[in-house]
Length: 157
Image (cartoon, rainbow, N blue to C red; front, side):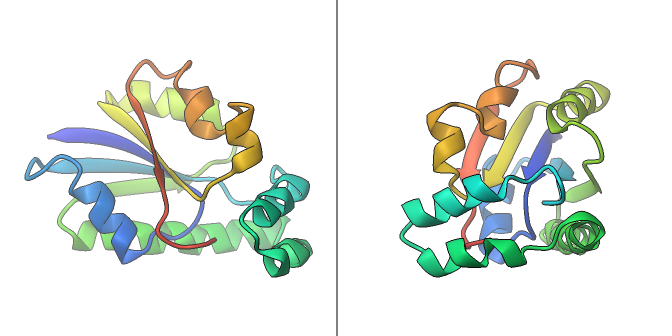
């Protein structure tokens, strides 16, 4: 049995689920999913810059409409439940939780607690953070002690 910690930022699509569940061929995988709601920790300016870099001016303008705080938490909980159900429907074991504290601390603790074999960060492109190596995957590589794989989601957030 292979154990993966999967960090996501939104509900997984069926393509995302197929992508992560087939990475190890026929070997069964247990997923421990972490999702951080966009809430107060999100940086609207960086998201808007990413939208502009992708040529999506309309999305950059709508960043102010993104739920924050408690609204983001309930939306995040729904996205987590949808993702867990999809992973289980694919035949994988899956459990998960919202990230309530600093994401990298939670990630490191979960990797140690579960004896995870790897970390998978499934995200949209975040060009500013990636350029400066401040994205979750880049920062996690220096903290968790297991391989960290960065994958891009199959849909826009």
